[in-house]
Length: 396
Image (cartoon, rainbow, N blue to C red; front, side, top):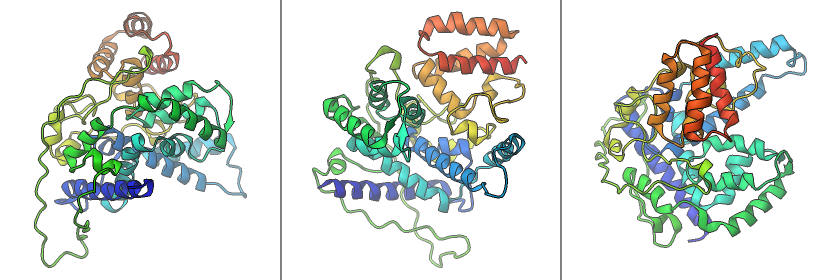
């Protein structure tokens, strides 16, 4: 099977799995919709959820770009503030029905399967995007949407000269050389295949094209409420996940970049964060997982796009009652991975303790002395400063 055939198989598998997962969630409730937190917990494979979120970010950016006109000054400060406020309000109203969500999910599954098999395309589409030129710092912003093989791409960005913008063609050539020299440093494909195989049968041979793929029945779209089927189709048999051996934790190339790779999303018992939970939760119906989701409290500008300096109305946020509520979903991912080496419980214990402290000075001292020393945050200034700013908001 050639590269084109491999890509075709991934796309077909993505559509089949997306249809199956949507049947499980929307089957009994065809008019149901998903909000932001529900999207981030929709599948037990975190990378798939992140790629859906990245597509939403791209759509959100396009919507922002449309609000421009040659007849008005959109760069005026009051216009920019009002526009930002409007988009933040709108972004809290994410509402995805099945017809709009399923194609995003299928694309995210297909792209996740390509990370280890087609690194060059992943780099070009997921990190570089449409940028004609880019610095390592700009490319690093997109790393927040990578979970599978993140360290491989992170190490490439660290090999680039800091602060130097390079044209797209040069970056692609450098990545090709890097891939050729470091092709043995990817995460094992078997682990990713196991995660997908729990949801829909998949083998390494099928994915790599070394064995023929088993022909699958065509995906038949579920009838819409406005055109009910005269003869209801028999329900699809439930997918019963088989126990999957727990793989050893991935070891990063450098100690400061150790990032735990979660296997499945959080169960209903732990609704706060959908990472680092047990493989047993794969048996929990998707609908039950989604019911445990928290309401969207952060605007999409905080949840999806990289945090910016406090120069817009969105960043000048009011006082918050607790850090737990103030930290957006995307910030939470970032803090757990970058400050707590992927340890979910360590993160929650630290935030819970910070919320009990009486004043900002005591909280900041706990961060800069106790936590920084315990977790070796000597090279994590960017993330530590974001946490300190949140503390300022709490005690403002």
